[in-house]
Image (cartoon, rainbow, N blue to C red; front, side, top):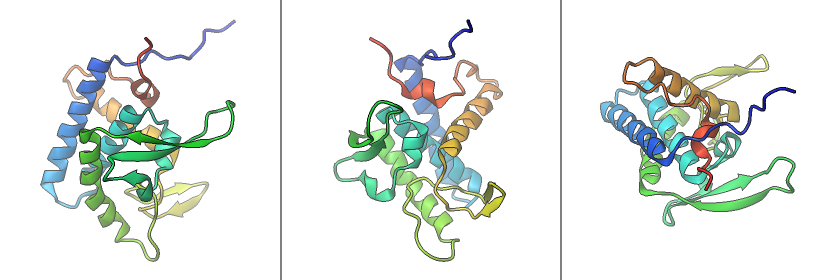
Amino acid sequence: MGVARYPLPVVPSGRRLQVVRRLVAEATAADARRDGDWRESLLVRNAAMVTLAITTGARSGEVSAIDLADWRRRRCAVTLRREPAGRGPGFEEEQPLDGTTAALLRMWLPHRARVLATLDGGDVPALFVSLRPNSRAGVLWPAGMRLHRYGVRDAWRQTALRWHTDGEHWTWVPTRLEQLRRPEAG
């Protein structure tokens, strides 16, 4: 009998706070440059997505399914569409956001608007959108389309791998968002 892959070890709350602080620092520095480069928008978007997942416990598919209308700015909350795998019907749930996550979401909005301004046609309701053209199933999609759940997952993995190689002793950071978003048992 093989060894179970799950549950993966979760990141303790103190370490999660270190991750959030670094994401905020990177996003703030990138936002301050304002060169209009997609790499700046990437840092801001990824920081907003990951802190939202950590704050709400949302899975990558739930993060990608969030529309701009689901963000309740005055109440500082977001509506998630939860679909527990094999555990009953899906449901909507409003989750409160902390000040850091709300600030990162506000920081992301001008970057999102800049990407969507390049599209011909209607507005995209998704809160998190792709920053560069990409292909799915052999079809080329322009920048500004809803980010797929695999895009959310891969965005975190690329961030973690970049941190692993930057020489600042961040090799403990997991490459799976699942390990960051799940709360500690207890």
